[in-house]
Image (cartoon, rainbow, N blue to C red; front, side, top):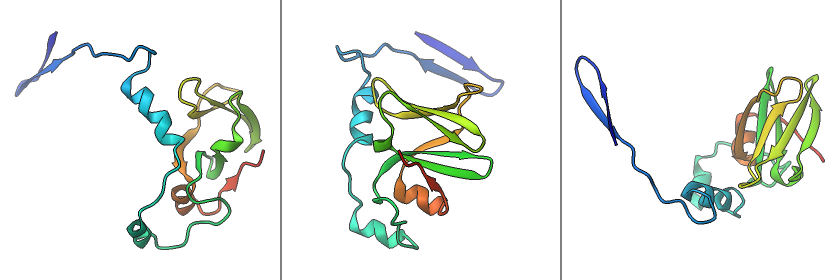
Length: 140
């Protein structure tokens, strides 16, 4: 199906085509992404040359986790501390609910009071700790 988008200067066509979904109901990204975020990875030796400091030693540098940023404060939730049933954490005078996706295990956070998500990113510890060196770390 071709649906054109028209401006005064240019006409752009968008083509929407159906795509095959694997029989278990996940898209290609839905199949590969969980393997990537839960995989044991390594950093190439030359990558370390780009680091200005040593990674924060409080956690193993390649620990995967959810980082939450709110009101000038940050907190890192290592993936291994988040059960599949989720957790609630009282933080920054609010209650935060973190759950893992049923299909991909990816953590997602929402404020219990409003149901709205805070600013959050899924990242490895070394990257987060370089950006937010004084971050709190969730302890289960």
